[in-house]
Length: 294
Image 1 (tube, one colour):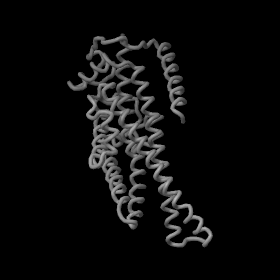
Image 2: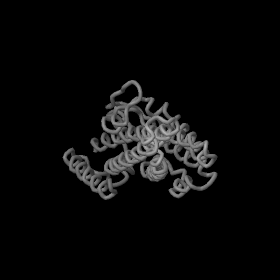
Image 3: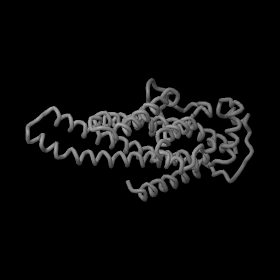
Image 4: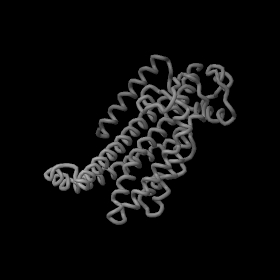
């Protein structure tokens, strides 16, 4: 989908949300307003600790529901595009590996083997292009999440946008910087910065991305126990990059670990976005209850 089409779709959703909010009598915040924490706790049925009180005061005073919804909408779109890039890359690598296996082990007629052998160089080129597109999509997604940490009062970004971008390309630095950015964004997306205030269906096991993105179905493991995909993803990514520059025999190892990295990349995006969607849900609940008491 073109960027202009995405922008138009997001603008239509914004207008629809504004109409709905006017119908409900929920106006946008005009600026800093006092917060009655005790009354808000009674309405929500939950108590805040000291850190949460500080966060809630800043949230109510500086963030409007419209801004939060717009950020959520944009991040949801960007995460889907990033996951799509990882999926496309994994499919390309799978087809290339399958074709190589067929040729090496002679699994077919001579005509078929010759055709696949002729096609393999083009498949290798395709996987390179898809891998580049995957990296670009990941960088754009991380830049947006890093930038939104300040907008949503989740802390000052640890890395500048240029550090996020060039951290993927500067030798030596690119072995550790992207991992650091992923871990930092994962940590700053912790939904437990606010208490779980209900309105969520708890299921056993890991919720699918569609459930997370559309139905808002969550389980604690979705955000607490699934930090490990980041380490597996980045380890396999680095191994694929390093072995890809070695002898020809290492092509199998490089392509296989590249495939593992692409598959784990899908789970990494899912894990981080699940945390952020749950955090957005809790923030929206606080803002909604606060505006209703105005």
